[in-house]
Image (tube, rainbow, N blue to C red; front, top):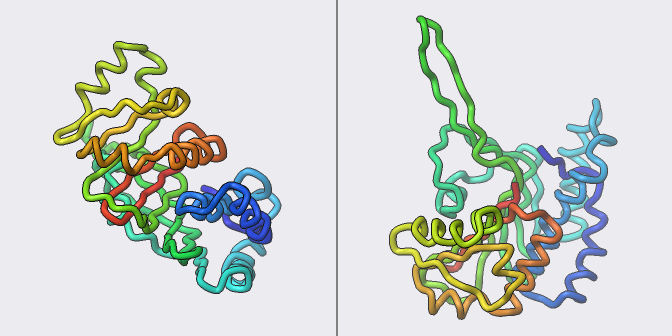
Length: 244
C-alpha cells in the first residue's frame, strides 16, 4: 500500500501545474491524486519506522490544513465501500474492504474523496477434512470519487483496452459482445485514446458529448502519470477514478 507521508509540500507546485494544464475537474483531481502517488514511488521507505504513525496522525493533517483548509487527511480514515460498489468499475464479488490514508475535501468547486483501498474476496473450501482459505485481490491502490459538474444522466465507463491490444480485431469483437446489458461500445475519433481505452456507455450520444476532445486529453494525461491500468466511470453528478 502507498503512504501519504512527507510530500504534501509539492501541492503548491502541483497547483502551478494545474494552471498550466488548464482548469477542470480532472485537472484538480489529478493534483490531489499526485500527492499519494508521488509519495508512494519516491519516499515511502524513508518514513517507515517508529515515527511513521505519529507523523501520519499529527504532522500530515496539520500540513494539509495549512496548505488547503478545505482538505482533511486521516491516516486511518474510512472510505465508504459503497462508492467502490456504485462505480461499477469492478464487478467481482468481494467480502474484504480495507482503507487508509483518506483525503477528503474540495479544490475549487470540486468535492472529492481519495483513499488507498484494498478489496479482496476470501473463500473457504474443505479438502480431506482440512479447511483451505484462498484470498483473491480484486483491487489494491488509489480510489477516488469526485463531483462532476457536467450533465450525465447515464453511465460511461472508460477502461483499459487490453483485449484489442493483445488480440487485435478478434479482441475488439469480444469487447463488443461483452459490453454488458444496456451498454454500447463506442469508437472514439482519437487514435491515441482509442488505443489506450475502450468506452462503454448507456447513452452513446451523451457519452460523445461528455467525452470532449479536451477531456480525452486530460484522461490521457492522467494515464501517463499514473499508469495504463487507470479506470474511470462517469455517473450522474459523479466521477470515479481507480488507479491499481
